[in-house]
Length: 326
Image (cartoon, rainbow, N blue to C red; front, side, top):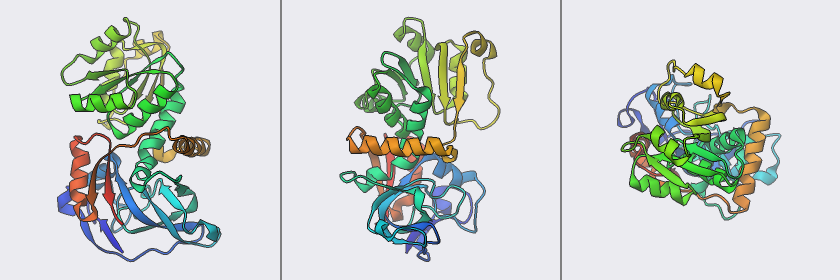
């Protein structure tokens, strides 16, 4: 099969190789997916750049979509021919979805409803599941105001849709007018350009000085400073799924204590079984009801995988980046 892989950490053009690898056979409890699309996420490029390899070589990417073409023992043969999307394909294992085929546990290949194309399916594993869990933990209600940090990101676009569908007013931080327009298509009521506006002052202006009821946060290293500036209303909640800085991050203890604020952290790769089940069922229901918009901002061929990684690293593509592997 054709695949992309790397054998050491480094820059995309220095380490990514495209060529032939053995086609995997599904083991017990596994399915093999003939992939059509592979999703590229920030965690994939971070892994390639710096995280220790989990094998002699790594086929990157956890997200993908395609058709099951073979099953191992203990998996119903009726699954053959099923359209699916994947989650955690390369989490803790060396072989992900940047290939024509991937073999993985049956539960990690989820039915893709008819009418949802494979490029959209390749956007679900990390972005949509992260968004669903973030909104689930935040539990916004009608009339509440939610701040989405990075509203034009792949996760942010889904969060904005899900929160707005619950009746929440979503304020999104963005980095350009193009990204502001993208956030508004998902239902953002207001946007704040963090490059040209004072975010904390603008939030207070938009909320009459009260602050927002909740924050969904992709960069806790910067949001912790916003908390100190009083952007979160009393008894508000911050749901955190990432940070641009991985070391120790100071938090404003007095602000947290005297306003009874709540911090919730989670890692999408490590959801508890009930959370994972709720996410898979919830996303399937939203897909079947036609209530999720998917934005593939850029699509690259497998031979262009280095450029795909660079596009994600550059942060200039609104929405998701996909590699076609069919």
